[in-house]
Image (cartoon, rainbow, N blue to C red; front, side, top):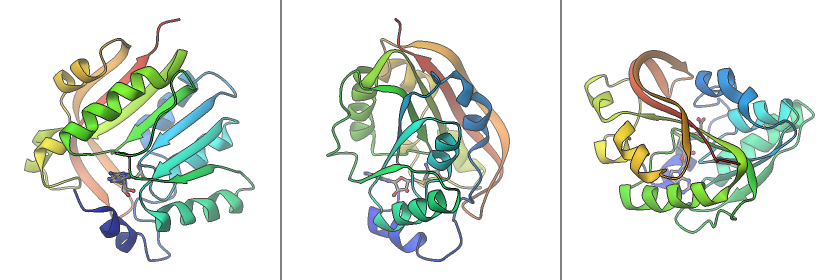
Length: 202
Ligand SMILES: C[S@@+](CC[C@H](N)C(=O)[O-])C[C@H]1O[C@@H](n2cnc3c(N)ncnc32)[C@H](O)[C@@H]1O
């Protein structure tokens, strides 16, 4: 995975690296988030997903290590007359507040494995009862496809990883699938992904 400074460089042109449209899996499933709820978007980058969710009337906070990405998110939100709270932080340091969030979004949040495990434990604690996690990541087999994602397979996730790391949540959707992805110049082509939607029991 590139370092956070690498992300600043990657986001430094006017173009949106992953486009301005939300991720397909999120777009299809965002209706599962409790209406008007508080949503935390992890590793939100230039904000396409956060801005989409704000447009649905959700109260959205986005966290990312890249100030350049989050500045672009604020501009995108402003253009659409929407507002998203932004927090510039390394996810290793950011504390997800327990029982605070009606929705947590993790789209292509590829972290070193030990950090990811820690973040996933705090996601389980951070959801309110009835809250949902929507997560899509590349699967380690994505390395064979070379259409986007990290070069280190340990940053990617299998369903087995997620069942272990998100124990305590109910899995509503759990897929390892091949699908076509077109998201700006960052992700383009047939890919192997892991998708989950999890709910915290009420
Ligand atoms: C592949 S991009 C995905 C951006 C966004 N979720 C999307 O779908 O458009 C990965 C993001 O993770 C962020 N990131 C990577 N490691 C991070 C860390 N340790 N702490 C905070 N953000 C991190 C990067 O800055 C980058 O914006």
